[in-house]
Image (cartoon, rainbow, N blue to C red; front, side, top):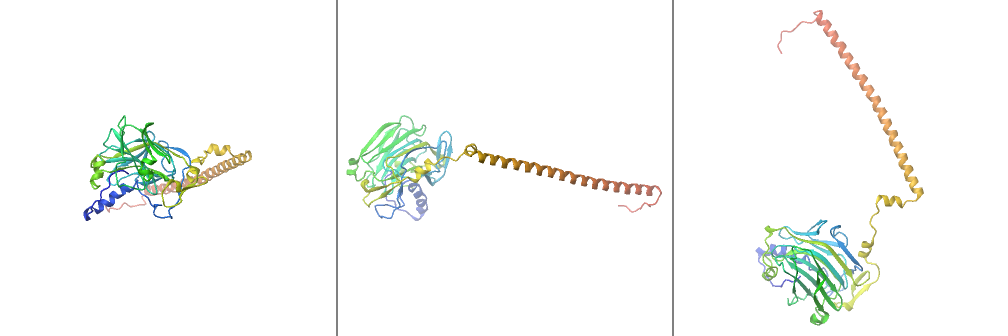
Length: 372
């Protein structure tokens, strides 16, 4: 992320707010293990291919991990990242890394003062390449980069004009990254080039394997540092939400090929990265054939198997017919018995009534004078 860093003083009253807001900033830029500090960090699984994720037809449930909040989906506008209430910061992060490559995102940024829509490439040692769009800025978007988490200065951000408001229309934001340079594109037009040597002699040049993080967060939350709120365009009024960032598709290309990437030492240089040969997990998942339909499974059966299945179905149908017939016959017999019993009961009642009527006619019963 690119907001300026200020050392805030937290009171007891603001501690709860700090904990809540920490989830917003950490949602997209964080590392669970920094290879500059230890040699025990896990390896980085590689993408090792070029793939387009179409969020209008499928969700981010394979090779992506939802790290904060929840997403909704639309067949027309893709994945929706929604800020509904304070504390929301919906974000997805790729489970793969690229070592050089391209990231192309079709995005419509979220509206809202202080709301920041972000495309972030970040490594475990905090190399970072960003796109950030402020919800209240309808004319410009920002590109930025960091090397090894160095935030001693904030002179790396550049604002770029866009022809139409990024909150109204989808735009193509592309980052092309090699060991020699990083280039940013908007709708296919190059807007910025960063050479290796221009990033503090290469020390601040992003050069280690990075994953991809897409998300939206409230930089304008009232408890954020003042400079962060100012950079984000002002305080966020959550009552005016929800604020929604939409992404139709994301194309990711890994320039390297291998199973995974390993830090060879604690220098954080691109030369220290080792590429482990083999097929990556992401590549296996993406190349796995889709589940066969019922007709496809039938067509793959041999003639003998089809005959066997047909025979089994025929036998089953015959058995069902026989059982059905048996049930009907049984029910008919049961019905006849019940009808006979009902007729006999009716006949008995009729005889008793006739006998009673004859007795009454002969005066065999006296009428009681007791009132009921």
